Amino acid sequence: MLEIDGSYGEGGGQILRTALSFSCLTGIPFRMENIRRGRRRPGLMPQHLAAVRAACAISGAQAQGAEPGSTGIVFTPEAVRGGEFEFAIGTAGSATLLLQTLIPPLLRADRPSRVTISGGTHVPASPSFHYLAEVFAPLLRRLGGDVRLAIRTYGFYPRGGGEICAEIAPAREFRPLVLTARGEVQRITGWSGVCNLPSGIAERQRAAAQETLAECPGDVRRQADITLLEAPGPGQGTFLFLRAETDTVAAGCTSLGARDKRAETVGTEAAGELFAHLSTGKAFDPHLADQVVPFLALSPEKSAFTTSRITRHLLTNLWVINLFRPLRYRVTGEEGEPGEVTVHPGTAFDRSGG
Image 1 (cartoon, rainbow, N blue to C red):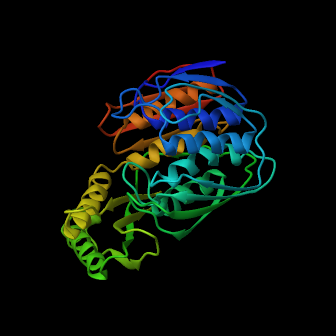
Image 2 (cartoon, helix red, strand yellow):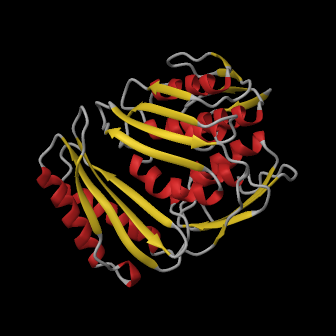
């Protein structure tokens, strides 16, 4: 049984989610202590408990210690089975992070799966639904994983209540990927949405983002095609999502509205984040980098990519994956700076860079 220190690296829910995914994939049980030890409220919160229970549901696993506030669990999986699943987080906890826990093992399941999750769809510290659908899922299909996403209702903090659905087809093999430059920007699109708030807020968000992008230097300077959206949902919230399509790969970023946060700030924040990524000339935005490494680790061949920012999430993900699967990886660059990542699966254990 693997012993995992949940306070390593990023020290949050990322370690737990990746461990659950790869435990289900490999059949290797684990014991994790110090779960979220450095957080203001340590231990398992509702969104983390939902991930544990969902992993149990798809793999027939037994989980000891899966209780609110618990800082240690023992997870023992059996075989992953596809099928129809419904999971409710019960709060505004991220539905997208829960889904990302389940995608790797369900791509190796015995049959297709349909997963419905209720919770937060556009909430802080997690990828928005639009990011998964417009950036992550297209790249995953390129690697050989077929995941189709749909959203029924939108969930914002603190109400939650959003609902997303994923159809996941088993994958025979994941293809390697080599991407070291972003290529030319072809177009920038996006959505500016409001939920149970005046539509003028969405218009102001869009105008601010378009104005910011129109002033950016180089090939980022262009008119962004941003669609206005009145999002159905039980709560209130706003968001602006931008997607840049380049010659090689898409990049995306999401900015969320909040009380006392001006609509113009939401727009300029998203546009500024997108420009910060594109101006480096690197292939992957920081979010895509850590989201793609689980699948590159399952490929039979070497992969390499550049990213505009090495994050602790990326380093932590590589470290956890390497506990479950023989992997040689190298990260060139300092945390917080642009860098390059090489992943060579199926070789002797080597945690260099991690």
